[in-house]
Amino acid sequence: MKFVASKDDLLNGIRIVERATVVKGLQPVLANVLIETVDNNQIKLTATDFDLSITTLINATVEEAGRTTLPAKKLNEILSRLQDELVKIELDNATATVTCKNSKFDIIAISANEFPTVEENISEEDSIEIETAPFIKAIRQVVTAAAGYETNNLLSGVVCEVNKNILEMAATDGNRLARVREVVKNNSADEEKVFEMLLSSKVLSELSKISLLAESDNIKICKEVKKIVITIDKTKIITKLMQGQFPKYNQLVPQTFPKEAVINKFDLISALERVAVMVNEKNSIVKFEFADNELKLSGTSPEAGNSQDKIDVKYMNEPLAIAFNYKFVLEFLKIAESEEITVKLNTPLSATVFAPNSDEDYIYLVMPVQLRS
Image (cartoon, rainbow, N blue to C red; front, side):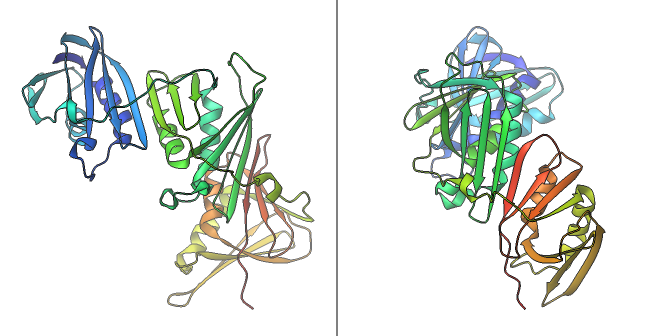
């Protein structure tokens, strides 16, 4: 195998597929990227951890066809340090030589025959093609509310639905819920068909990052009963669909709220970060006290002491004291694009909704923590 490609194209491709590699797996080849020539003008890069597989095509001048696998991390390190010139990769037995101008590296390869087969072909009968930007934006708005990847249950997933030109996405870990609705341009052949899927939050997080490298106006999603292929530009993400019934999350959102506060997002972020210095790290609880256009925040730690801060807000209802895991609130604030946010309140133990003061249909529901008297 012998080919020449631009340093930027090759590095970009490696960074895309590297997200599916396994650094400390039982099979050393899973830390590698499969490099194979496609035709005289392209090579294909593939990586997999069995649950997630990523492939991408890059332009190249192929002088000799072939395939091999090379360590993704080491390739990334080498390419990122090279000059912006053409890079030549040549395979000789079990060694790949990477040259760029005056730089030369010999890398030990693992045979491509040891690399798992990645099936990326899928029926397009159940598919959709929509705008990339609102889809990626929705991912970023909800994915933090999903349960951690290690939980391996439905709450570590994100539910997505496209109905005509409305995208709805939601995630919950049982303590908070994020839901967003976005208007999207639906380029599907059957715009009337409702498209639904439940995907791992890990996969969607990786897709969000990949979208910065594989720029495309549209994203295509094809799914079967257990498998899904997401195509963005020349990159394909292949993974399993999560199976099971996701909670009926819209039923968790209260219909009315007797109390409401309007807060400057940046004021609240700054105050929370100050108060959090003295918060008990085991529970991350911050007390919110609303009264007479003022919000008092307080934290306490048995080992360290106490903290308190006040900010001006718009609040004219009866006084209310309520407590939250401040990290949940901060995550929402740093995602919300509106300068002002509305906090919709009920009782100290009722679900509270945080929402940006904009045209967005985006809510972030947080369950409060019971205050000790």
